[in-house]
Each structure stands twice: as structure tokens, then as C-alpha cells.
Length: 228
Image (tube, rainbow, N blue to C red):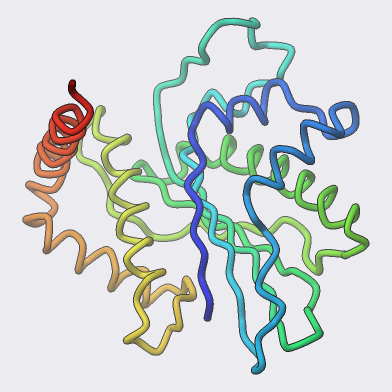
């Protein structure tokens, strides 16, 4: 498979959920989605499966309606989880199948963010339908979400770190061409990816503190690079 990954900033998701209306903001929708580069390569000499994989950090405040959000104020919320969207097409030299869209939810407090994840999935599906209809293409599935087994936090504050860890482990899986899963998100591949990642991060007991330390080191390195 040809897998292209995209990580959406939480502020973009908040904008989509609380301010963007695809029926009213045609130009903004087109501008936003065009930046995601959803079109797969169409010049392959062989048949090829293409996956656009979009990572979305989900906050429980994302399920609030736009009417309940005060303009100019940041959304609150108390929990983070990860939503992954796979947009799958198969292309040959002059042919492209209808896109298939699949949603996956990863939550370190299982089930806590499912309402918010479903709200974002429905909104994203609506935007993608709007995008593909403008290209005279239909998607071939309705919104279907798989609640995946994910490692569980054992405190009340590590959800954000776990969300970043899930994304990094799945990015590794997306870049892996050695296994038989071909980059697809199936149960065994996900479990193996999380196990390998946690082992590399010192085990689940030390994962959160080690990832925080590494993020801090990365920030300091970037600060040094960009300092006068």
C-alpha cells in the first residue's frame, strides 16, 4: 500500500466542529480540504492500494455544539483520545475506485470519549462527502467506527501523553513494509505495534515519563536551532 499520513492540529478540529458549516462556507471547506492533499497518485503502471491516514486528537469538548461555544474563547474539556481516519482507494493507470472511509477510535480511558469521537467522525464524513461530491465521486460507506483495544492509563492526567503515544505507534505501523498487514489497521497489527512501541519506551510503567522527557528534549533542541 501507498500510505500518506496527516496529523490535524486540535485547533483545526475545534474550528471544524464549532465554526465551520459546509453548507454555508463553501470556499473555506474547499480551501481546508485541498490542503489535506487527498488525491492519490493516478499514474501508476500497476494496480495499487492508496491510504490517506488522518490522525485527529479528540477532546471531550469537541462534541459541544457550535451554539454552546463562546467566540474567542478556547474550548475546555478534560480528556484526550485519538481518532484515525483511513481513506482507501485503489488506483491503476487510468482508473480509481470509489473512496472507502473507515474510522478508528483509540482511548486510554475506554469509552470515555466515544460521544466526542462519533461527533467528529460524523462531521468529518460530511466534509469528505461534500469534497468528493464536488469531484463527482461517491464514497462507498457510511460512518462506521471501530473502537480499538488500547493501552489504559492508570491515573487521571496521562490521557494526552497516551494519545501522542498511540499516534506515534500507529505512524510506525504505517511506515512498516516488513509485515503482512501492508499497513492496514487490523487488531493483531495494532496490538503488535503498541507492544513494540511500549517496549521501546521502557514499558508501560515508564512510558509516560519517558515520552514527556523526550518531548521536552525535542522542544529544547528546536529552541536552540531557532535561537539567534
